[in-house]
Amino acid sequence: MSVVPFDQREGVIWMDGSFVDWKDAKIHVLSHGLHYASSVFEGERAYDGEIFKSQAHTDRLLNSAKLLDMKVPFSGADIEAVKRETLEKCGLETAYLRPVIWRGSNQMGVTADPDDVRVAIAAWPWGDYFKDREKGIRVTLSDWRRPDPKTIPVKAKAAGLYMICTLSKHAAEREGFSDAMMLDWRGLIAECTGSHIFFLKDGELHTPKGDCILDGITRATAIALAERRGVKVNRRDIRPEELSDFQGCFVTGTAVEITPVREMAGVEFEVGQLIRDLAQDYSDLTHGRLKL
Image (cartoon, rainbow, N blue to C red):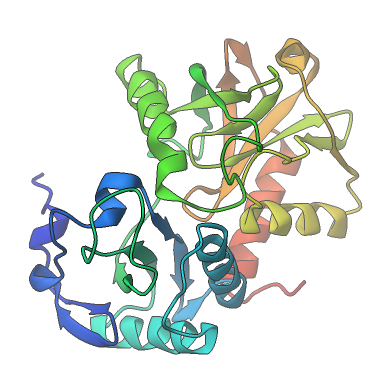
C-alpha cells in the first residue's frame, strides 16, 4: 500500500492566522526552527469530534514556547478555537492534531528576531501507533540517554529533544522491536522514545519520577485512572536491574494511548487484566463513556 507523503496530502492547514491549502503550507529553508531547533509542538487526539485534554495541551504548548523564549502572537483562547475549526474544515471527528510553533526566517544565526514567531495547526486521520499493541509491544534498550535538566529545557516539548528519540527508534526497528527504552544521564529508567513507562508489581504501579522528562498528559490520566481503581502508584527512581522484579509493564502517551509491553530490554512481562482494564478505561474516557 502506497503512503502519501505529508507534503502532498489534501486538505487545509492553519498558518499564522488563516487557512491555506495543505500543499501550500510551506516555510523557507533558512527558517531558524530548522537550523537551530527553535521549535515546539504538541501531539493531540480528537475522539468523536472532541479533542481530548485540549486545554492541557494548549497550556503545555505555550509553556514550551515560553521555555524557549518565544513570544507567541496568539493567545491560548485563539489556539483552542483554531484547533476546533481545523477539525471542522478538515471534516474530521477522529484525528491527530499537530500544533507547532517555530522561529521563522527573518534572521539567520544563533540569535533570532524575537518577533519572528510562527504558528501552525494541522489535523489528519490516524489510527493505532503500534501495529501489535493488543498483544503487547517489544521494547529494546537505547544507547542514548535523556539529558541532565541543567543542560536543556526538558519540560518543553521541543523539537531538539527528539533527535535522540529518532535515532533510538530507528535502531530498535532495525532489530525488530517496536520501540526503545531510554535511561537518563544517571542510569535510571526514564521513558521510551515518545511515551512514559509504568511497571506493575504485586498490584501496585511504579513509574519514574519524571524529573528529566516531559510532564505527560496521558501519564497523569493513567495515574488518575489507576487511583480510581484503588491502585497505588509509586513515583520513584527505578533502576534497570529492577526490571525482572516486575510482573507487567505498559507505556502511555497521546499517540500510544495505553499500550501493554510484553518484553523490555530482554525481560518478558505478562499482559495482565489490570493493564487491559486500564487500557479499556482510557478508551472509555476518551470516548465519553467514563468520567473522572
